[in-house]
Image (spheres, rainbow, N blue to C red):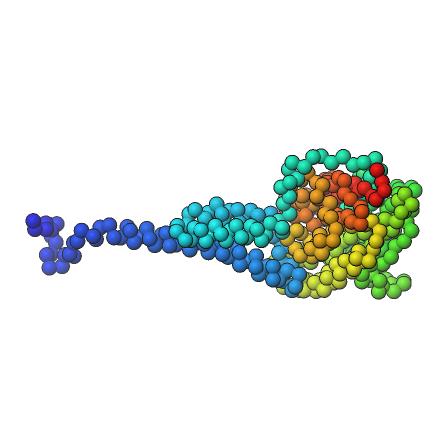
Length: 387
């Protein structure tokens, strides 16, 4: 039967119709869409895996590696899980390659995530009667910026800790970029009668137990007697205080590591990256000094403070290998300490560790009552021979 042309169609110019013409275009479009979807899903999974490899190679080795500190550690679990959920959108080999890349990324990144699923069913810890209560906190420039001094001291005293490890015993300039010394020792003695007080630079340790030694740690060992306060501030980022507990020396390390970033300058500012580059070596020196001192110390040890490092950063790896993270007794599957009062506390930059027979019995972060952008660390520790 002859083909019928629509009215007005020139038989000489009309396209030749075939039975295959109609279905070919939609099929071609479907194949193109599938290839495009496969490329997006597989590309995203491989890109995240490649990013992890670059981060692994750079972190701790070059100063740019510290950029990983910007990423909320939870992303190292949530992103690969999201990629695994998206994998079924791909077809054929791309689906399984995407899923394999997501699983590999999850395995690689889980240790950097800060997640502790076991905490969800861990029983509520009950400290023993001989436990030592330790309170560690970044005081936000000794409460210069928030609240009142009366509130500040009432808050500290309400914790009734045996040992206080306090940082930022200082004030700041109007632009918050400069550091200024303060002298609040008279009030400290009045508010905490019977406590021993140790001060180095911006670090203050209060102890109900007798203080027997305050050996300098790391770069602080090279600070000459009578050095000015800016030098003391810059070099003293670890305050070791040896105290007598039940006739035995116990070492408490009060830590506030140099911050690696200058977030107020912004990621697009050259000042941000200049700050990163300039702080890289001083941070490494402080961490190395702390690690060396711990390696030579046979006392039971408690190490706590603001490390300005997240679970995603390699700075903490030697400490986590040598000592026990107090969070191992926490009931919080994802503990965070910063930024309190800000958008959301997605990061844990405050840490506590124990070793040489000292063991965490209870550990939790507490609200700072709007006095600081850091949560407080509340820690109960058992010591060898106690209990």
